[in-house]
Amino acid sequence: MGELKVEKLTDGASKVSYVQQLLTDLDALESMLEEGLFEKDTIRIGAEQEFCLVDSKWEPSNRAMEVLRAIDDDHFTTEIARYNLEANIDPYVLSGDCFSKLHDQLDQLLAKARSEAAKQGLKIILTGILPTIDSRHLKTEYMTPMKRYEVLNQIICDLRGDDLELHIKGVDEIKLRHDSILYEGCNTSFQGHLQLEPENFASDYNWAQAIAGPILSICANSPILMGRELWQESRIALFRQSVDTRASTYLPRERDARVGFGNDWVRGTLVDFYKDSVVNFRSWITGDSQMNSFEQLQKGKVPKLKALQLHNGTVYKWNRLCYGISDNKPHVRIENRYLPAGPTTADEIANFMFWVGLMKGRTKHYDNIHEKMHFKDAKSNFYNAARYGTAAQFYWNGALVPCKELLLNELLPMAYRGLYRMNVKPEDVEKYLGIIENRIKGRNGARWMVESLRNLSASRSTSDALRIVTASMYEHERKGYTIDAWQLARGYEYVPEPSTRVVRYYMNTKLVTAQENDSAALVLKMMEWKNIHHVPIVNTDFDLVGLLTWTDVERHRAHLEGLHTPLKDIMRTEVITTSQDTTLEAAKMKMQTQQINCLPVVEGNKLVGIITSKDV
Image (cartoon, rainbow, N blue to C red):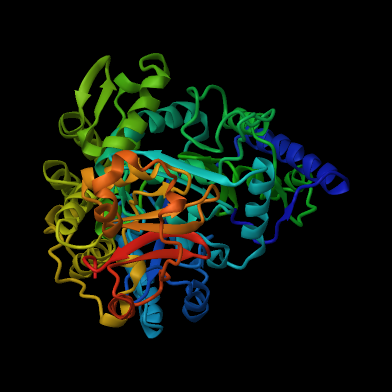
């Protein structure tokens, strides 16, 4: 959704006008293709860098708009969340030192952003999902205050007719309901662009689909969301669900998720690809353009196809087809959307080069891949890579092949050949693909994060461990080390100040609770079996209404068999509570003053956790 001035597409004259523009854009696109107007002799690459802004506690900062104004550079733009920004790198011809030039410009842009962020006490983190994001940062006040995001959010919520649901199963499981699309804001990516030759569109696009799984496996670095260990690249599941318009009963033309891998190989021309998108997905938005693209074409001008691009901007294929104009000639390119941001710019350029090298290094054996590989194997490979990273196995050439074996023995050599074929500077090829090789032989970003968090969580709260991991990522990235050389986070990277130690970071959210009408005898017995010292009691609306403690267990232990009463008859109803933002010191003082050993943590009347003297 690069277009800034958009409106919700509603019935009436605006819809008639938009549909007419959309059809005219498709006619103009078909005419340009038939007349051979697309740029053919030059292949360009480009990229978009999304990044996170964090404060002194390594948590998301909501000051992206202030930083953007201070940067004052057209290369930068907003993202949906107020803690993310995007830098757009200029396109380069695929040849010579194009990748090192792209890397240099990327570092210069990020240096500019870092300088302005530092003036506001903020830092920049490159990662697919910021580890310290929690439910607080998904509230509407964290949405960037721009019309296009407001419109997009309203459309998706209206289409679903209910709250958005997030449910991801991995090593852990997360299941949440939310009233906005800000889950999308958890995702940050490094989106690579590669120009295609129109006549080879279908073959090239299908090959991009075939190699997506193996490439994603070695690039994965987003295994953690809200403290839960999910997929090795959790962005794939998270983004798919964040803008899913499908309710339990599918609407016509909305049977597929707008974020997805696709359901079949591409056949036909690039015009057929766009037509399929229009057939399968309804248009949501319209802009303020009234230009007739076909008339522009007849006057010798290259049309921008704004209506078609608006529609395409709301269909999020992991390999997305994009139309553009370079040197007054139309071109078409693939936007690779599955590569995560970070953990360093060198890692990102290596990922990008690996993908481009494979795209240009395809051997004749893999021509017409749609005839040699079942599409569901390509799709299965992609989602296996997202779930398991380098532990995945892939269906390749009719056999099940371990990830690292396929990468080292076949795909990496193919990438070298493709880059040499395009006359990319050999020193750059060896430098960046060497990073990929070291990562294959070592560990990727996902594995580094998982191992670091597991080690830290053995002796620290999850919240402190997440902030230490984030601080460690920043420290390693600033030293210039690529992920293959990173030591695991050790713990010294971040030590919280007493004023920043608040209840939300240390409370226990994995609670054993009971309801007021439950059997008192059974719940007291359960407390005894599991040595549970505090059980909050909730009503049918899950409001906190009482508390049982170990004192109650000891008081009733001798006559439990004869205790035929509900919990509401024996529970304590005058419960002393605290809030999530209370400091640990204040919580400790309250427990000492009241001579109690626990404080249920509430938001309103709702129980969200419990903190005990042991936790403090």
